[in-house]
Each structure stands twice: as structure tokens, then as C-alpha cells.
Image (cartoon, rainbow, N blue to C red; front, side, top):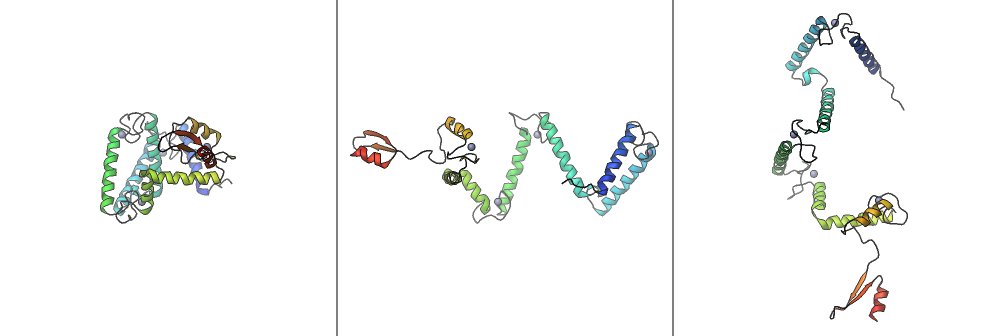
Length: 245
Ligand SMILES: [Zn+2]
Ligand SMILES: [Zn+2]
Ligand SMILES: [Zn+2]
Ligand SMILES: [Zn+2]
């Protein structure tokens, strides 16, 4: 449902329109009468009035200790962030560091090496401060006793560093997705198979590695212990028994 324009939005649109009309027709954007000063949008009179008003507002804000020269701090902060994002995108698009806009980052990164190093120093400092305060180094919630992390981040970290834990999580996910008839790799619905056609192709061309769970039935290799004779590989215990008879 389209949002109805508020009276304020309509008034703002009207002002913007008037502003651009006056600007286009070579008139002061404030009074709409006198021509603007060279390179400016307002006539001399209006410019002086505007600057005096700005000075007064800034002085008042300073006296009252208000940020953003007395303008709406919420609006100002939002505008600041938007300006920041635009600037960073422009730098990145120009192939420059998206943080400082001065250097060209190395091998496809978006941030230059000095900025990365500065970031690392800040991160290290924050880590040390959080450790000293015994709070989680990731989110600064209270840390679990003897750990550098809160319960949630301790679990995440355990998964990240422990291959066994990761395999257990993988196995559970594999079983759950199979039961729900979803592709075990990307979880799109599948009919009977473990993987969707795309993931099956990827899985087949992947270098041999751990796949989360065995892809087919288990195999039994029959090897005689004393002679080390290999009697072959079988899919069922019944076949193994038949071989050994
Ligand atoms: Zn004017
Ligand atoms: Zn930089
Ligand atoms: Zn945490
Ligand atoms: Zn898939």
C-alpha cells in the first residue's frame, strides 16, 4: 500500500521545486528577486542574513553544549552515515582504499595495507581491553569463567577451531536435510536424491575430501589378517559372509 505523503513532505517537495526553479531562472533561491552573487545561490542580502542566522544558531548550540550545531542530531547522524557510505563506495569504484581514499589496495582488497594495519592495532587493543575486563572478546557480554568469550561465542569458536565438532555439526545437518528431502549442500527441495543436480555436479568434480556423511551404503573390505590377502570389497554383511564360507 503506498504511504500517503505527510503535509511536511508535501511542503518540502514544494520548497525543493521552488528552489530549483529560482536557481534555473538565475534568481536568488531565498528571496526569488535579486540575482545571486557570482558562484553562489543567494543574493548578497539573503546570504548575509543566512550566515548571521547560522552563526547565531552555532553560538547558541555551543552555549548549551549541543552537538551538530543545534541541528536534529538523529537526522545529522543519519546524513553523516549516508555521506560516509557514498564516499566509501566512490573510493572503491575508483580503485582506491575504501577507508582512506589515498592509497591503492593490494591484490583486490578494498582497504590499503596501512589502513589494515591500523585496524589490526585497534582490534588488538580492544581484544586486550576486553580480556582484562573479563568480558567476551567478540561482543563484550560477560565471559564464561576461564574463557575469553560468552557462552554463544565460545560455542561458535569451538566449532571454528575443532574439526571433530564441525564434522558432528555437518553430520547432523546432512541427516536433517535428508529427512526433509532437501539438498544436503544448498537445502533446495529434492526428490529422493541427496543433492540437487547443480550440487551433485559440483560434488562429483570436487577433489576427494570429507563430505559430511558417507554418500552411499557402507562397504566392507575383507582382508585376511595373517596372510593380508585382499578378498575384495562388499556392500552387505551377507556378501561378506558368503565370501568367507
Ligand atoms: Zn535574495
Ligand atoms: Zn587506506
Ligand atoms: Zn560474545
Ligand atoms: Zn544443492
